[in-house]
Structures are given as C-alpha cells and as structure tokens.
Image 1 (cartoon, rainbow, N blue to C red):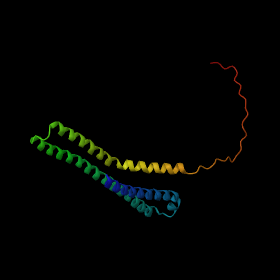
Image 2 (cartoon, rainbow, N blue to C red):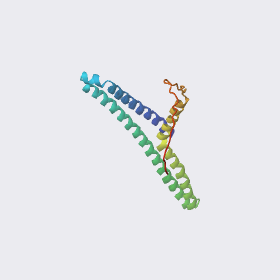
Image 3 (cartoon, one colour):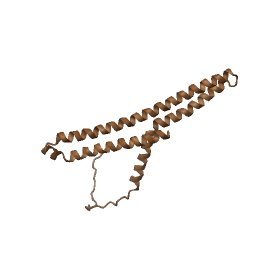
Image 4 (cartoon, rainbow, N blue to C red):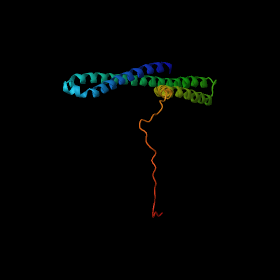
Length: 168
C-alpha cells in the first residue's frame, strides 16, 4: 500500500500537470482566436494542442496502468495467501495437528485481512483525491471575506397593496 501510494501520488501529479497545461493552452487559444484567424496560425497551434493533449492522455494511461498493476498485485497476494494457507493447513490436518474447522476459520480471517488491504490499494487514488479536495476547501474557507459595499443607494420602496373583491 505504501509503494502504491507513492507511485500513484507521482502519477496523479504528472497527469494533473499535463491536464493543467492542456487547459491553459486551450484558454490562451480561446483568448487569441481572432489573432489566430487573422494570422492564419491554425495549423501551427493545432500541433501544439495535439502535443499537449497527447501528453495528457499518456500521463492518464500511465496512472491507470500503475493502478491496474497494484490492483493485480493485491489480488494475486490474496489468492496466493489463500492457496498457501489451505495447502499448509491440509498438511497439518493430515498430520492430525489441525482440524478442518480451524483451517476454515484461518482462511476466513486471512481473507478478510487481505481483502481490506486490496480495497485500500484499489481506493487509494480516491482517498488521495479526497485529501486534496479537503485541502482546497480549507484554503478556500481560510480566505478573508471582503465586506460587501453598496455602490448605489436605493431608497426603501414604500408601496401599498389593496386587494378588492378577493375570494377563496
């Protein structure tokens, strides 16, 4: 879990940086679209955008590949531990040193432990993203609120309402 945390943190940071670079380029292109049309720079800007977009896709694919590798490793660990525990338990049962009930209990407990670790590995990216979101929210709420000032004074309206011949 620790190794997957470090690798996924780095991969997520790289993917986010590439995404931010691509989005910045899109914003710049949108702001300068009239100049780009007037100077006929469409083709030169297209290859820049395609490069940024390809980089974004590449980083996202690397991040997904790393997540898949760690998920597969965790699942393989779960399967391997079950096979080893069952095989060793069968030998102990044949030597009359262990009962079938104890072997079943050991398998149940070890599978619960391994499944918890497998879920942690598979959800690590979501946990990491949640932590980052909490940090962004904390920094947002820590900002000083500027007092609201009215630029135009409005007189309080004074009106009178009369309802004649109203029926319910």
